[in-house]
Length: 173
Image 1 (tube, one colour):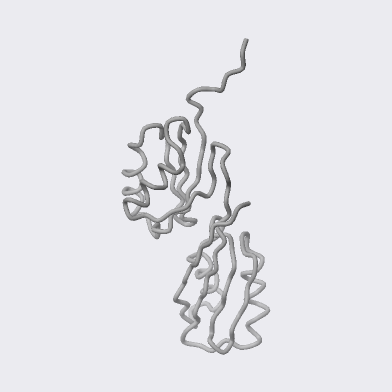
Image 2 (cartoon, rainbow, N blue to C red):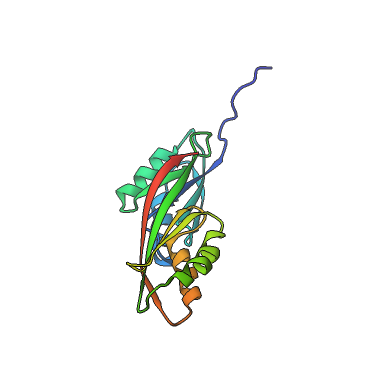
């Protein structure tokens, strides 16, 4: 007997989709991906902006799925190619502007402890002059919105944290 590649093998690929901010985008994403030939299942994690797609790579590749999303107004990048292609980590830099209060030196240690030990956070830095906390993180593990919520809990209701700005760069693992 000859060893032949398994036909109709289903794999799970993951995409980081920048346009996901709440549940209202999910029906549109399902509508874009589900009808593609070879796609068998779609799961969306709103908090991490990740879309996981079960598909048959001999019928549809990750590039086709990504270009369909992009063509419908959902910029995305391949986080994991289930067919053994390259996997990526999404390195993000989030800047959180603290308003309505002044950050001081006494805030540095507690904020770095609160944010720095979270899964996916690589580095936390603070600019006290501009009231800015900058966090370098893997957006596949923790999003700017989640970081913003954590900083808000640090200040409780005494302060408003706004301006979550996420800059994403795709990096080979």
